[in-house]
Image (cartoon, rainbow, N blue to C red; front, side):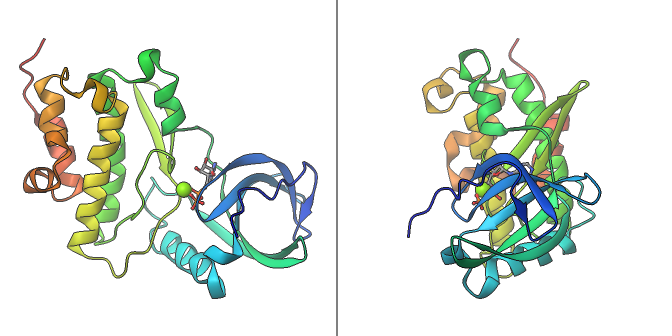
Length: 240
Ligand SMILES: Nc1ncnc2c1ncn2[C@@H]1O[C@H](COP(=O)(O)OP(=O)(O)O)[C@@H](O)[C@H]1O
Ligand SMILES: [Mg+2]
């Protein structure tokens, strides 16, 4: 089964409690709608898990427990509850969480002039990300699915508000899982500054972080988000 959308219409009521407002997005595991709790008017996001991606409710249970365990990490969305619903004659689970205003990082980058951020601004955005993810790594935990469609971003004042959605379970937390997050962070930064087409022209400060996207070179320098943060905060500028 390859399903991309449930195509829920506005005003549909889910689980007797939530009114559908609009579609927020979709991915490999499910489709996400902005909903409003009918009794309070509070906005939430509701992720409807594709049943084939959620056997025995395993994916929902993992995601809910992980979000709860890491509920004091401000970069992650807050879990609220889960509900069983019936759609198209099939029982499935929705996971209700905090609704995050903002734009997907992928879309934000695409609509910048030239479809990329200037290095200095990209470093500020990377800093907001590593600052938040460091708190996760400090607990020995990892995100597991860091890419630009799992990051919601908003400019605020001189910096960025960033939130992460979606996590993937690659097994027990380990140094290797944390390192995978670091490699993915560097890939996101590379995407922010214009990807492979621009790489040759990037200043040394960008290359010092991207390291030709060579996994071994990245990890020999940065093994956790905290290492990346320290580097960004103390790096010397030689260009311009
Ligand atoms: N809490 C949220 N607030 C706003 N938008 C969200 C939220 N959660 C998910 N989205 C949107 O829905 C999309 C799919 O959600 P995600 O959890 O990443 O599903 P998948 O696991 O299928 O990739 C995201 O890329 C994002 O656009
Ligand atoms: Mg996703």
